[in-house]
Amino acid sequence: PAAKIIIFTMGSEDVFARRYLKAGVKGFLSKECAADEVATAIQTVLGDRKYLSEKLVNNLTNDKLEKRTDNPFQSLSNRQLEIAMLLIAGKTVSEISDTLNIQNSTVGTHKAHIFEKLQVDNPIDLRELARLYQII
Image (cartoon, rainbow, N blue to C red; front, side):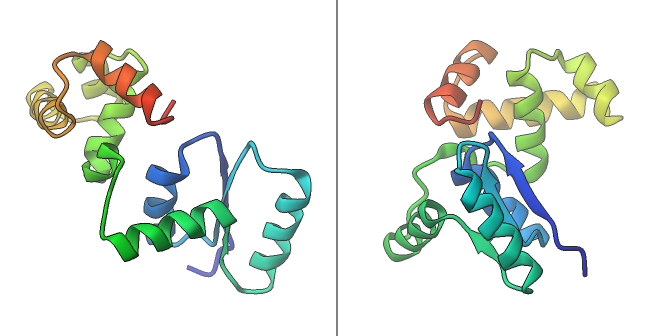
């Protein structure tokens, strides 16, 4: 709990930042940010405060005010998102089952729920949706 973690990733702020912040990280940065923003984030977190990019603060504020979730990937549970990311990476149900040490049927059930929530019919459509929402 006392660890001062900053996530530095190409992952979409709209999907991943909220999850990581809820898990207790102190900051979230996109790899597209400027070097001075990285330095600011480090100083902020070392000063025992959370760091959020201006874009993320605006998105969180607007979402809260408008009570919206535009990105359908936000509707996935953590496990569903984990499996969706593996499907997007081209992994098969068996490979995901081995990687996560869960039953094939469990992966299949999650896959069905993911496809239903995201309204896609196959992994290709899932990958395209991920590109559209800048998940990959």
